[in-house]
Image (tube, rainbow, N blue to C red; front, side, top):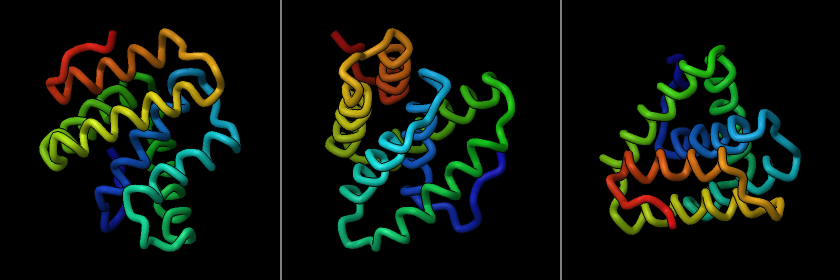
Length: 130
């Protein structure tokens, strides 16, 4: 996996959010990019918007180096594991809620989105969504 230089927790979060929005429907809209930036901003409110944009660009570059679904799934598994180890219970719950927020943004939660969220929940060792 080709990761950004000086990778931060924000890169990992950005990668996970980008993976979620792209892998569940095969597309990434401008509104989804803005929504991800807004969510990342909540993680680090003092970060300048240009810094958030740079992190997103680097996370997208990382995502784009993964050319198969298997490679992307492996990277999601690895990043979710990093977040499980690095985030508190409260932060992991916040991350899961933000994934649900992204899923609901277009008015419909797809089976693929539910599967992704449940995968992250299982990695975090939290019960499956109901």
